[in-house]
Length: 400
Image (tube, rainbow, N blue to C red; front, top):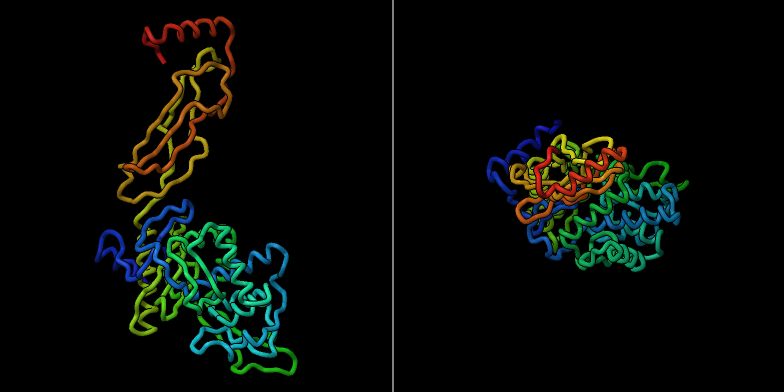
């Protein structure tokens, strides 16, 4: 396990101080397991809060969707219009530094969104894809409706407006769907540590940029500093406080966290508080839970009557791992219901029962039990004696 020493205390603090669930500063927070979608932690998860620049994840999603439909391409060249020139963006905004006399690919605009968090890049993409901010917001909201995320609502693509709204619960679900639909986004966008713009290739002949090439670090402090973190996005406006949508993997298992409304008396303090909050939740997800694979008892088999084999192996059909608190593995209960006997022929994969795994009142997994092998029917004499055994089975004990 490779963890930067500068971040080690962020892992150890919640364990040393609290022992149990993490104590987060955020007004609202959700932690989910990526594979199953199971919620591992929540705090005021349904409070509606402006997402700030987390909005840009939806902008990126809509852009990916437009590319998947063949409407635009990675290497399309965009000529930023006046609305997206950095001089015309609200003071204090995060910027990619687009301006007149430039041409920039869709791919570079996406990196300007994901790494530099450029509000100008969001406007340029919105205008290129749909012709305007309002039309693009309609696309964003249509996608939220398609995904069943009615609590997420957007009026523009950058996150600057306090009229945008999300809840931590639904945005965590969005992030899971986003990663399922765009798994390559982690490597090509969200885990990129820094981004430089503009380069010579971005300038039209006879023009120059106001500031020259500017290299900006990824706003997510946990990238390259915390075990397994490879995305996704940070955000801040005064109306929401400091927000972060973060994901990472540990021992092959991915978790996703959304934290909204972290406080800070100053910008640097808020940025650090946000990173510590996110580290607490990730550490809790990494080390407080484990995967369990549904399994039957070893060498479990069923009696077969009238077959060439007396017994047939059985297995769980399509077992799916489930997530449980690390200290509750021994409390998982297993309920098995099996047919009393089988008549040959028996086909491989034939349903013969059900199995359910529970933790207290929660059903963790339920599925079919099926045969593992084919058993052919035996000759008439063997079949006759087995039919007799079946007939008198309720009256005499049988040797299985």
